[in-house]
Image (cartoon, rainbow, N blue to C red; front, top):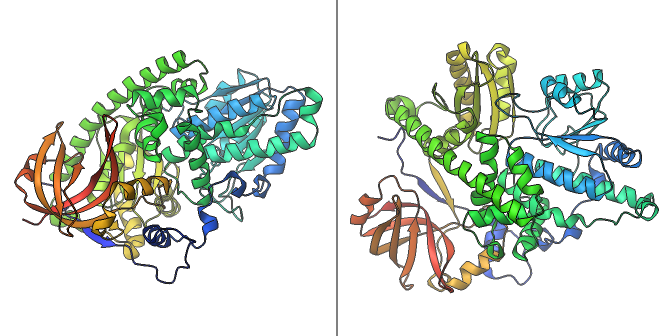
Length: 582
């Protein structure tokens, strides 16, 4: 028995009748873009020339000055990365970009999450010092590393921070900080991923070196930084940051390179082991195929494996590393499935009526894997539509628990943790994150008190949030729109992603045929009630697919997909949600 009813409410996005026309675009695209707050055609321009200037980021001048000095005086730079896909791609982009710009002595260090935890900790600084760097450059971390920055300064190392996470009330005393979410920052995008921030630093650095005559004087060929955009796209999509105009440009340009066969060998290998064709790569392929395989290294082992895959220039070496990552991802799936089943079993033991009044949920199991609690929190959050934190014992310290939080629209999870830390500082030792996801460490003995405090904080913020299961759609499609041509049109109209959602439509269908494929997938032949011809459809990952074989008609929320089989392309509906009508 599920903790909350699985039935969802289908809500259609309101039509924006006041939106100005967007050129000569088809009516369907006009409607879709208007509902996504697109106001003029300029916001649909995905050319690199539309990117805002990197100098608009505060702190960029100091960052570029120190990195230019490192290049001119052959200083040693050590990149401190992070153990997720954004951190891995940011590390690879920094390594490749700085080398191409003429920095000879550059290397990287990624904290093993099970030994050192997250970010520039004093322990990581001590380890970094054994390499005798002049500068530490953080990517996708550092904005909360006050102690680490102080420890580095005491050892004679400067720290340069590139990050995108939300800062606390104060920022570390680093030599330079570039972060679009610093207080008072007026950069047009606050949604850059860590890899996007690092890419912007490289663009600014190249401009400064060009203006100083560096390339002419040294004979170093001025690099084409656009060659890094496939990695920027991967990190941006995998980190699930909002796809605002800037991020849509970065992702679109990266996808163009991948489809043209110009991606780095490591990314091509990741797509290949996932069974994806690079020439047809979509943002979803980056998020659900390449990204998880890269993340598997950081979740179960050491992200250095993933970074080395992205840095490999030899396709054979890249392929071997991608195979190792694919095996890790298979292990990750098995462990995650076991943890998810344990979490759902715990939910089923709770009183449904009591649970439905709870605004949030915390879960803990002694046997859970620290690196996978975020995935469990995400799965349970999708099931119950409440903020969820999943905890596991900390590998480094048996007296601590590591938690990963996932939230729903309307409840900013990092702000919830910040308020709780202010009201009851003894409950949280460390935390950080975004509106929709966060990580934290708490004392093991304080779990019950934390659970109660967390629920109270969420309850304070949940008054305006929609706690009902809701799936938002773009309404129905006419018979003449249910075509392969429409599906192909939507494929080119993105990239789609967080805060710029892929179009989802809804409608009623007669079920002309159905069969189970795999263990949990359902293939259907549907007859639309609007008079359109029969259409193939597929629903993935059903809990009880056999129950749907007796269904004669459904209401479905679906996406238009292109099914390719033996060089034939046909329309297929990818069902996100369905309910039986008869």
